Length: 273
Image (cartoon, rainbow, N blue to C red):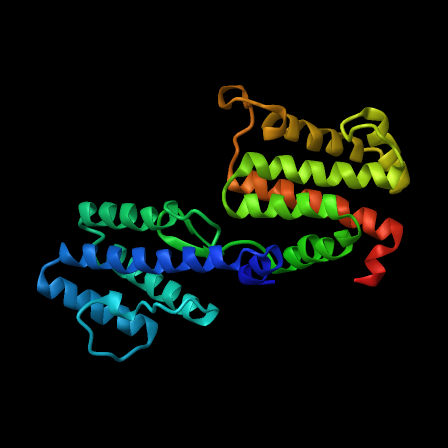
């Protein structure tokens, strides 16, 4: 499942489109600004090397001219390839010019740090652009859960919201809604009014799902993470002991999806997907 399909399922495609247009604009302006600091011959060499790396033969005056305004998947892939080629060329060609290297990395990092949404790509170590997420996990733990949760509108809305908050980088609320979505389903599944973090609830859930008793520690940790980070518990920044990173939040949402899938399989709902 592509990043666009995820946004479509959450009904926020327009937000993604807006962010992609901003990304393309920042990329264009950043390349132009970095090129302006080079003399004519260095700039021409960079342009030639980038064209060679991406396999294009155009008469252009700036690498930025290769960046497309189109935000379709194929156009975005091409823009990412061009941006990566520009980064590689700048860092390789000017490796003996530390100020140029530092300015290039800082400018490129600014493009990605300015993102308000997850666009499906991230910057690693200041120079390598990588695809974010895993399509197989998205399909099994996100899309299929959204389908079977249609019979549980409140939990579906909360699980959907957890994804929206993850994508919009509101990590505390992502934890809150992921936890609440699972708690609602567990209460329905077990026929209990007890909260998810209750030891009896965890014990009954493990038994009902026929899981190893060691899963109790994992579920306890799952609940404690929500308690430490979730906005539901009114935690202040200075009280939070766990670092709230995109990776930790994504892991928590996927873990929520994993437990939801176990419940779906136990109830036979996964056979309808």
